[in-house]
Image (cartoon, rainbow, N blue to C red):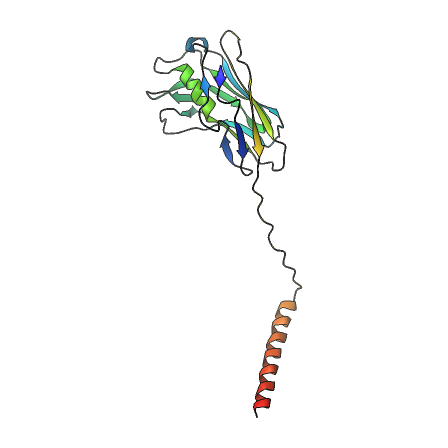
Length: 201
């Protein structure tokens, strides 16, 4: 069972920003034994509002700190559940609005807690889009075990709140006029000064 995701509603900042989908970084996973996760999958899908400019991903930490995931090699995820980074599974998809799929490895090393690792992945899911002004998104996340049993889809949303930069002032200019205007202004100032001198005399 996946919990603490269903009520999340990320307010997406500006186009091009990568944001975590788990707003409070508190997603939980339970109900399926770790041994039953082998060869299963975590699937993240944009249920509504998908755009070709959308990208689903995972926030990686090259330091392999506790509670993080990292790409050991292209497509191969290592996760640290407490005693270092260990092989967890493979990742594919996520680009152009497609599903992001993390496939569990066929076996887990003894140092890795698959349930805790699943939780880490859920907390590390990211979303990015470069399409401003597009509809809000809803997401669906499921976990499928080795028996083919799938958790009830957890659906949550992303609301767009793009910061709109103020429009730059429009300056109209006519070629050749700027220099002429400066000369005319200078002549006018000289004429006024000359008139004041004549009055004093």
